[in-house]
Length: 131
Image 1 (cartoon, rainbow, N blue to C red):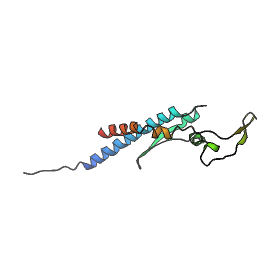
Image 2: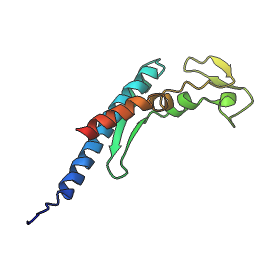
Image 3: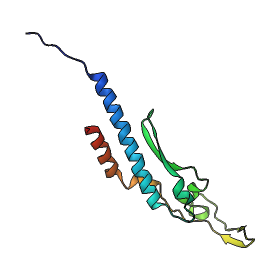
């Protein structure tokens, strides 16, 4: 009796990598949606700047914003940020009015978009990996 084996491991590995990248893309898009839903809105600029990107080299999905004030909204400022400025300060707005502030409380939208939905991401990954 002669038994022949066919090595399909290269095709299998390729299919698994492709499934993982599809899962990361879906996770990134889902996380982006959660972050946008949680993001506080004034002008809509911050919410509209939230995007995701998949890095196939790691592999990983990143959710974030390129808004220059996005980190201040997420983490807070002044006395509300751990290690931040403790003393109040004044600033002048565009209309020439003066204001005093102690900072801004954190309004997290990125961290909870990821941390609070682990099961959702697991389900996406499992679904893609099962094919």
